[in-house]
Every structure is written in C-alpha cells, then in structure tokens.
Length: 105
Image 1 (cartoon, rainbow, N blue to C red):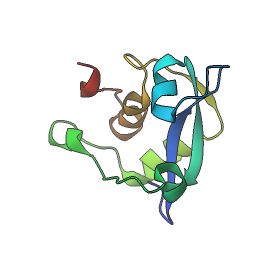
Image 2 (image 1 turned 180 degrees about the vertical axis):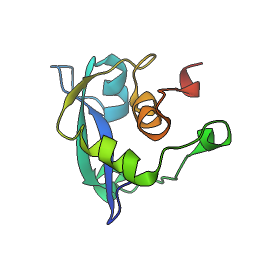
Image 3 (image 1 turned 180 degrees about the horizontal axis):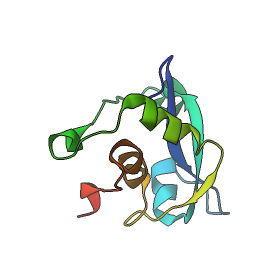
Image 4 (image 1 turned 30 degrees about the vertical axis):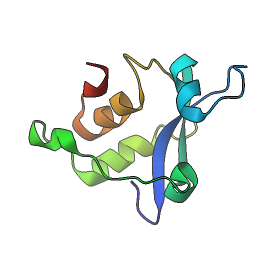
C-alpha cells in the first residue's frame, strides 16, 4: 500500500489464454506486470485485508524503503510462477528482502 488509496500489485499478462478470471489466469501464465492502481480498482467489491503475517518471524524493512523498492518495479514485466515466483513472493521480497510464500508449502 502506497497511501492515497494506491497499491502496487502483480497482475497476469495475457498470453492468449481463453477469457478466464484473473485468479484462474494467474495459474497458467508465466509473465506478470507490476502495476500501480487504486485498491478499489484491484479488488472491486471483494473484501480485502492487510496481511503482514510474516512480521512475527521476520523484520520488515522501513516503510520508505519498501515503497521505494516497489516503485522501481512499476510497469515492468516480471516472471511469474504460482509455485516459485507468485505475488506473495513479490511482496515479501519487497517487505523483508526475502521472497517467501507459505501458501505453496
């Protein structure tokens, strides 16, 4: 979260897959794009919450550093792999300096 309602997030790049929902498409894609968007555009009417669950076991970098690092990625295409390089890996790399994702364990 950047403030003023904006987030930096990783979204799938359409590689000619059939028209599927974003979460289903993300399983099949190998590329993603980092975007700065309004949170309300990203989540629509879905519920959301802040999840800093790794703060119990890892020390987060200073907020200014996290934002600076995240802003460097805006509009860049990144490799995507649901098991080894997903959106949680991306944000934990920014927040803690190490990309982790318990959801794939």
